[in-house]
Image 1 (cartoon, rainbow, N blue to C red):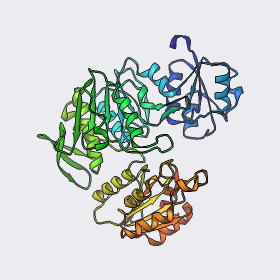
Image 2: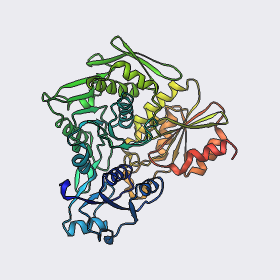
Image 3: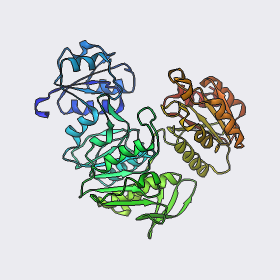
Length: 464
């Protein structure tokens, strides 16, 4: 197929992974074009530097140059004029995961990191350990690791490390993206119900993860958390080696003697002690997966620890955005009650004795619904003070499916915490300015931009 293709058009090119892949194909000599509704920096700037012509808006005429292949982004649905023309004219098309498999992953040693929580952190940490130890892997990560400076890179290395998203592939392929990634090694950190817009229930999610498990070859390795009960039912296989890691006694690799300092978490695996510049039990499990994978791939414990020592974290994962007036502002991508609760625990470990605020935007397709009505209240109640923003796109959901913010507040306050429901960013900032005091930590949770609340709040604190 590749021999016949010289020109490629991306529908939805401004997605992070789409843009990175398009840039690499351009570098390899393909003629690349693309279109998107959201053409603005930083992706538009990146694509312009790559010399890729990006067309603003979707229209059939964007395909008049008759590309050899059309890559259809995950955001594209039926009714998109370019997708409709592709189908009507029987053009050659594929999804981004299919393209990655055939153009970049096939023939490589692929490591796929999957799980409901911690994928980005684990993939970033694993990639950095490989990079620090001279292996120079290709990678594709759904975040921005500070050490690597980019979320994607394609190299001549034998290794390809990729974050395995369980979200669906495209409108014409409803399987999870990770089934396309040819795993030699698969990492399963955990499994919970999420993405209520595409999965019916927990069993539906487990079915999707079991498809990934079935793809691990006999000469590969499946690394899975033995602490997660939702994973255990899909690990009863004998066609590939399995290593379980975690904190429980039943694991093949068990962490003990966990302790937290101001700058790191320390734990022991057998006789070897590791220090991790991250906090919380979830991150210890993430690190254990990385250690087990790196040992399997021939990296020494000393090489692993040396990389850990220099790891700077990932943007939007417990990222300290700044401090002003003695108040620390943290940005976190958390949008699932378990992720929020575990981040809260980790923040308390890092800032013991300080008052903790949780500011939460219900924006994901799951948290806009009432599926986790009680669980969200339990997670937010672990803060001293909670602020809930207006539920995003609420009018698009039937009333009986909507998250009930007033009930959320009632449940939070019945747990002994204090909560507020405020309509917009301006009102939230005024509320925080009135009630925060020096020493407080404000953790802002959103899987979107949240109206630039972080910069605006810090600016007001600084008196700008």
